[in-house]
Structure formats: structure tokens, C-alpha cells
Image (cartoon, rainbow, N blue to C red):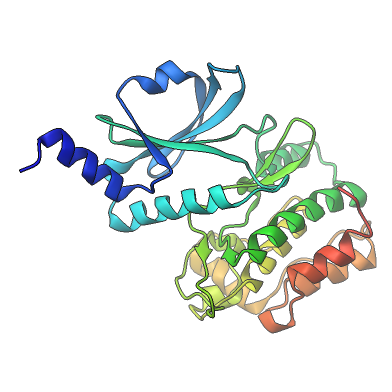
Length: 294
């Protein structure tokens, strides 16, 4: 029989992808200085940290693997694979992944975005009572489209595009992040079936538990665009079922009159209940990039 330490190492390497390094206990604090907590989720938390080697700031996503089931562990492996395959100025940059023996935690080191997320920005904007100028919101929206164009071109559906998953760098650059429930489509397969995501941003076909494709991310981008313009979500309700009813009916309050007819039409196109009638992300990007340069 193998020694216990060898069995434990073999078990860990079977659970995590090969490019997720196995670290000895204590190396985390030898390599990083933890500066504070950025937030918490169901299976872990996000930390602000400084890499001791070069002084650069990073975001450490800490995942408690001991509390995860097999499905959650598989999704975590998939997130690392997806992040490591994406390199784009409008996507949160992946740094490294490691597992510290004895702690039962996996760490994903990523780019630190100094200005938080888009949800917090829009809440602060709403508190001031001022809507964004159309040119400003379109600069942000085009950056989201460029990120999605890169993601979808690789056969990946993000499946959780929302303002809290769009980060902001110090220079106002938008970065799409959190690929924890993304789906890598297998060659020759263009539809997914699992119902996942955040209810406010779910496309009708997802709500109805029908097969869906890249156009579900286009719908979610339309929800983000609407939120950029109104500082409110298009489909709101006191329960998931109430939100679902509004999504399926496709009713949302019109945009404020200060915005152009082109913006009204773009929102309507993106929030078309029929996915085949929504524009592709390539069509949106090529059209809107001409109007606004990020």
C-alpha cells in the first residue's frame, strides 16, 4: 500500500487540473501578503493580496473544497481551465492556481480590479440621481461586447453575465469575470440544457428550461445595457416566479427619453424573446464599435 502522504497527493492531483500547483502548507503566506477581504460566496471568499516577489496586487479566490460536492469541484476545475484559456484586455486576467496541502482550500490568483464592480458603480450613480450619458454607457457596453465576442468565439457560454460580474480597473476598463458556471460547448454541439444563472438576467429560453445557445448571453448583455441606461434591472420582482413571468412576457419599462432612438432599438433587439431574432454578438460589436470606441 502507498504511504498516506503519497495517497493524499494522488487524491489531490486527481481532483484538480494539472496546471493547479500543489503547495506545501504555509507557502501561501510566504508568497502573498493578504491585505483584506473583498467578498464572500457560497463556497469561499475573495481576498485582496500583494505578491511578495514583485509587489503587485492580486485577487485571491479561496474555495473551500471540503464543503463541495463532486459537481461543485468539477465546476471549479472547469473555471480554471476556462480562465487560463482566455486572454483579452476586457476579461479578468488569470494568474495561477494552487492547492495548499492540509488546508482543504484551492486558491485562484487573478487580476485585481481597483474600482470594484459595475453593480456598485451603478448603485452609486443612482444614489446621485443622475443617469449616465449615452456616450459613456456605450463605451462600457462595447467593452462588454468585446469580452463576450472573445469568449463566445472559443465556444464558451458565460451563463452569468451581470453587473456584479463585470469588474472595473483603475483606468475605467471593464473586465468580465467569474466563469464559475460557464459552459464549454463540445465540437458539433451548439446548445446547452442545464438551467443556471442569476434570475434577473436569465433569457426566456433558460427560464422555460429549453435548450439554449450563445444568444442567452446576448440577452444578458441586453439586461446589462438596460441597467446602464436606467440604473435599474429590466425585469424585477419580489420572487423568482414573479421575475420569470415578466421575462416570459418580455415587458420592461421604456428607456428614458434622453436616449437616442438607436439605443431604444438596440435594447429591444437584444431583449427579443425569440433567440433566433436576437443579433449575434459579432453583429452588435461591429455595429456599436463604430458609434463608440472603448
